[in-house]
Image 1 (cartoon, rainbow, N blue to C red):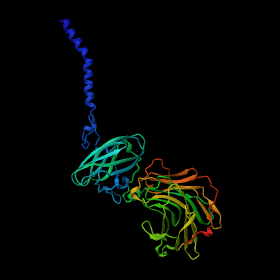
Image 2 (image 1 turned 90 degrees about the vertical axis):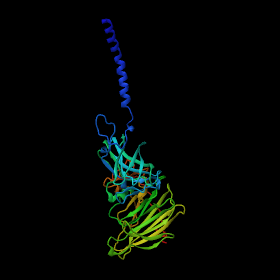
Image 3 (image 1 turned 30 degrees about the vertical axis):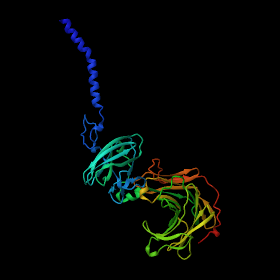
Image 4 (image 1 turned 60 degrees about the horizontal axis):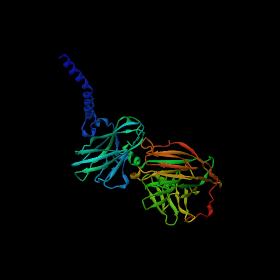
Length: 458
């Protein structure tokens, strides 16, 4: 009997490793169940047995009114940036709405949305870096917070969050006010538009400028510049301004998919009592009018289908008329004709000046296309003194305004490439250049060869 008992004990102990292995496999299988089996709307309290984050992890609201775009001109969705409404009139399941913000930390990024469904229910898909999360929404206003999921940010920079409707039970998918984020990746250093009164300009993106340096002590009557827009850098709403001055500017625009223009404008005097800027004359087919909005003044434009990759020349003359006003004239060189095209001459009262505050800029004037990038080269700036000497500017200061200020946008830069100054903005790129940076290029050394006395004036 003793022998039999010892044999039983020995047998039981010999089974322990096998029983342990079976228990380990059973527990492992239970622990490895996908967390997607937990409903994403369920608020799960944190603890030892919790595998699901919740809305309490969403600590920052990115307003869609200032940071979102309906991609590729799609219909069936609209961003309202003149208030804090965000995404409205969302009816199309094919429309994709993208929201941008910039993180400076790596780590976990929790994601969610804030919104409501007017009637019925909807399923909305949130996609970031190729990972998608479906959120089921129901319930009318007020807006509700929904947790979607989390991703890992390994390289800080701009993050794009895409929203697309997957299904709906009524006409409208839903009204969305914010993309919600949280986690270590959002703990500090975020860049996004958060000033409601500036959402329109935030969506347009930052304006960037080059301010050429010129020797002081001279009066400059003429200014000359060359601008080239590279392929793929000409989205609708772009304005490439070549010859800017204290009272106006001269450059070219992309107005629509089928229309491009040469634009020359002069502001009205700041004091209304001093009168208005008026047109003295204009070139053939040049349309002259007034303008308003961001101030008032006189504007001239000539419809011309300028091309990417072609270098265009701009010439401006500014001089007092001797009667208390100043005359402003501009010409555009048409390469296929080999001639200078006269644009217009304006007279501004209550000022007697030559060129002041010379500069160039690049801006987007279309708030729906601020997610697209644009770039231009400014390659050969010269100014001519009243005594007849052309002076080349080979250094300039890079400045930023609009959405580039107040930490609203960070996609702007300037610099020197292949001996040419350049400006770039939009597109939410990461390698920005700090404002007030100075740039220097090599001198070309060849002054403009223009017969100023034979320039057309009508």
